[in-house]
Length: 159
Image 1 (cartoon, rainbow, N blue to C red):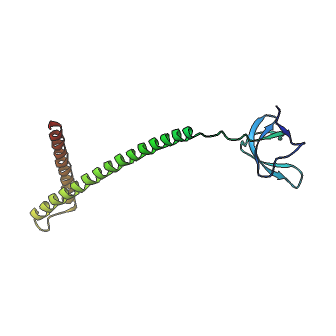
Image 2 (tube, one colour):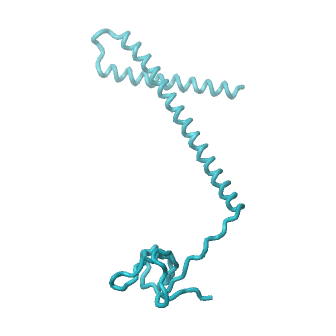
């Protein structure tokens, strides 16, 4: 059955999306009507389609979706959402752990610096001394936290 309609025979309704035939192929277009100069205005979904439309046909009806199809679609969607939620939770826990470590390092570094300032002779602290103390305090804090975490991990694996 040849259900292609010649544009000479009849045009689609304005705004109707249809399958159109060009000399070089077939694509989907929306008919926008006749222009004042008499030419036909098509919204081309494939920009590089060349030539003038010769024939058109209505789009076919979409396939019927069964309850089973919907069930499969929902199951896949739910699985994807669950995976995304789990990834988000892992990322959040990782972020929270990094922030906890940063706070511990800051707290420990502040205590080390406080001791440095208290023990230093008044008026004898310069920028270099402060930089050295900050670096030392940060490195020391990171080492203490790492050692504590390793100890906790070994205690968990021993149990």
